[in-house]
Image (cartoon, rainbow, N blue to C red):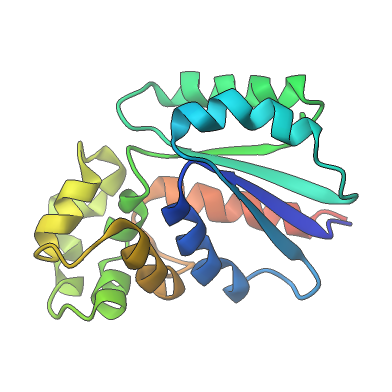
Length: 187
């Protein structure tokens, strides 16, 4: 049985989002640990060593990184290879399509609540927000939409607790949540 989930994250804003999201669906008794890196190069350079060094028993591992402009499959396979080399072949690797902000654009009602910016939620039906993983610059879109009220860390902290676990338009968000749920449902 999994007693802890350890998240290896590209940046602090992902940790802030997860701290607001995870308590809403993780079972009691599952501890959460965060290892935050200073960007994707730092993550890729140090991931194998940090995984190998993890000694807490009954831990599951989730590695999360932004796609940015790279090829999602190539990035995911590269991270999975580092996990295998560290002896953690069952680590869950998830890529935020384009950027973490795609998760937020997939649930504009959460952005409206978290940042207290009225009228944003009703824009969810606009074509570009129905598939936010396809946007070229989700962070730029979010800044425009919120008239620069969104700031990476503070915004992630504010929006995370409001993200809907059902119905988010970001496919990569839904895949992350379903992967975490699968980890905790394993016997």
